[in-house]
Each structure stands twice: as C-alpha cells, then as structure tokens.
Image (cartoon, rainbow, N blue to C red; front, side, top):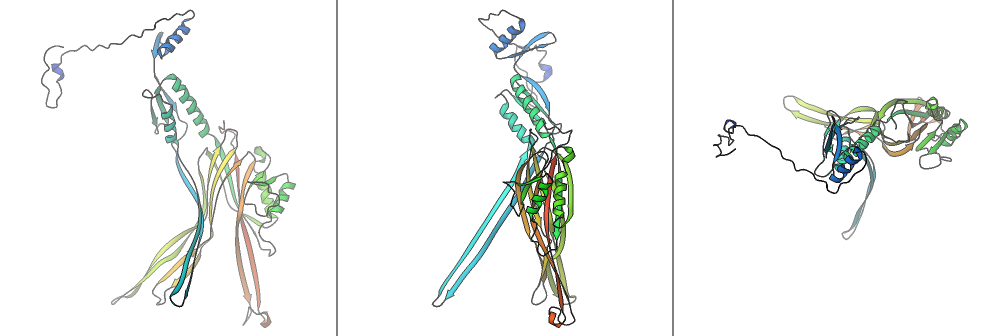
Length: 427
C-alpha cells in the first residue's frame, strides 16, 4: 500500500473499506546445514538433519515435516480430589500452690505441664500433577492445560518432553487406581468375673498359636504381653483364608468373655482415599437457663439446650504399594457416654447441666501384607451396679440387710483386614 493513512473512526480504528485489498506474505529464513555428508538410508539422513538443527521430523501424508513442538492430550483416570484430615492427642495438668504467714509474708506458684501431638494429611491431587508438569516443561516453549471437568491433560512441547509426560501420567494412573477392600469389625468383650482384670492377651496368644495364627505387636514381639495395644494378626494368605484370622481371634476372645459386634463395615476404595467410620450418640442437656420476673406475668424461665456427641469415629487412609503391601494410617477417637451433672443456684433461679465424658485418641501408621489384620485394643470401661435389700438398714447385714454387686468390664477390640479385589489394578 502507498499513500497517506485514512482518518480513523471514532473508536480510533482504521475503516476496513479504506484499506482496499492487501496481499499478506510470510517470509521464512531458510535453515542451512553446512559440511553435511551422508551415506546410507534416508531415515538416517533425516535423523542427522534433525539432530544438527535441533528439530524433529515425521512423515505427514507423504511429506517430510520438520517441527519443534507438538501437542498431545493425556487422559487422567482419577477424579480431582482434595483431602485434608488431622488427628490430635493432647494431655496436660495445672497445679497451683500458695502459702501466707505473718508480717505480710506470702508465697505462691503455678505449675503447668502439657503435651500435644497432631498428625495430619493434606493433599490436592490435581495441584500436585500441575506442579510436576510445570517442572518438566521446556522453559519458554512448553505449555499445558489441566482440565478438571474432563480429567484431561493437554501438553504442547518437544517430543522428548512428551515422552516423559506420558510415562508420568501412566504411572499416576496406575498408582491412583489400585484398589483395596478394608473390612472393619468393632467388637466389645465383656465379663462379670471379679477375678478378671481385663483381657489376658497371653491366653489369646496361646489360643491363636495353637490354631496356626500369630499375633505380634506392631513394634516388636508380642510374647509375654498383657495388653495388646496395636498388634498385627498374621494368618494364611489367599481369598479362602482372608477372614480366618479374625474368626480365630473372635473365638479366642469368647473364651474370656461375651463377645458382641458393635459394628461391621467393608469399604472398597482406590489408593489414598480416606475411609471414615463413625458410630455416635447425641445427648441433649440444659446448657443455660434464665428466669425473669415481670409484674403482669410473674416468673418466666427460659431453657437453652445443648448437645454433646459421643461414641467413636475412625478414619483410615490406605497407601497401596506396587508390591501389594499396604501402609495404613489410622486416626481413632473414642468417648464414653456422658455423665450429666446438674447445678442449681442458691436462689433457685438458675439451673444448668454439665456433661462429662472420657476421651481417648490414637494415631497409628502400620505396614500390612496380604493375609494380615490390624488389631487395636486397650480401650477398657468399667460399669459397676449395686443392689440392696432389707427393711430398715439394707446396708447392714446384722439387721437383716443384704447387698449384691456386679462389676462388668468391657474391652473394645477393633480388627481391620485389608484384601485386594481380584479385578483391582495393583500394578
């Protein structure tokens, strides 16, 4: 085009009609390879030319095309998962002391000791993939797009980077699609024999050993232990015997008391998927009361309820390894049914109830093999009931009274058995 530019419109743009027809040409700088000598087939020559020029080549509809980058799309066989969980175990005590004397002498002091342990897991699956891909791309050349809606990854980069991305995506698809079935049995073992001080795990160990199973402490040999804590029950492998260990353990426990199933659950999940289990009760109590007095109406009492949730909740996080072994992170919390204590003000105008409960927490990470079960115990509870009979003084046997008592001790036993479905991808 020659001549002066036309006046722009009100938006500052040149009108298309005033531009006329313009021929656009694209110029390319030819690539020259000097001192190139070759004797052999054409593929070898093309490889040499691509290597010398820093490019790649391919056949496209009978044409030889040299290129620098290409675009590929990879399917992600996993959902976009964001997981955050934590478990806290804390203890503490506070004491206060003081003394006063004559001549304005006084001394006082406070002592506080506490300990807290918090275990947490937090991960964002697609964010981790995004950061890994960004580190693999060629600087200033590579581009990518991670679509959470379609679960696809699109990458534009050199073929060498594409091969590395393909291997990474295949590995992640394989890891995240491994499956495990977690069978959880929560048992309560109770007895009313006064001479029994909880479960004798030596007897349990002997009973299991005679049946061909072994019970080992997670941190060492179990022989001689009187409190199991966290143990591993080892039985035969294979689908036919996958629950034989738990059956043998239940039989051994029934020799020392009445065994009842509190809850039982089986969940089949993919790798690194949390499994929450909860069995809880909610108790309503009077959290606040207020009495107001008016001239016309009189006294009006308003009660504000509160609610406390007790029971047990547990979260399991499985890491399925390529060898078929399982690393299991378990976070467990248990609280007893609350004891409600009531308080009334001296003037009788205010009344509240305060719930008290006992809390126990456990956080454990163990490695399990095919055919093994995780056994968690050590949570005991005592229930004492007393009945009296007699006309005047039931507590005094000299005057015809009688008193009978019943001391029941219950122990919570949790059995977690992992099995791998035959159709699961554990490669």
